[in-house]
Amino acid sequence: MSNQKILASLYPFLQPSSKDSASVKSGLLESVRMKSQDSTQVIQTFFDAQSRKSRGRCHGRSGHLPA
Image (tube, rainbow, N blue to C red; front, side, top):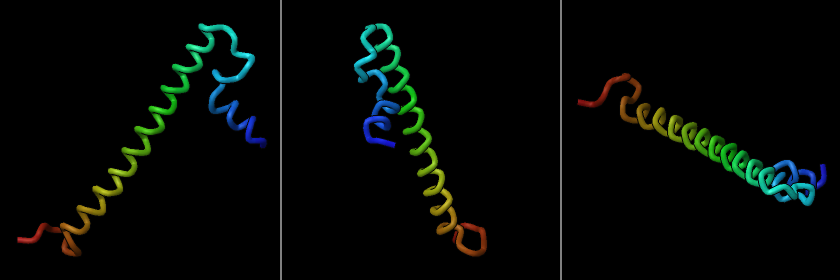
């Protein structure tokens, strides 16, 4: 897949065929919504993994917090 096609799929509102301002606005809003949703998921996944690691270190092999 060419770089232009990849960019067109990621940023459809930047393509020359998108002349209608309502279409451009709609495409931009959808793009921002999708990127925001993806970013939120990535952050949540990262912190879930970090939380599991931290609990594992705190609880150790016994499964209990140290006294």
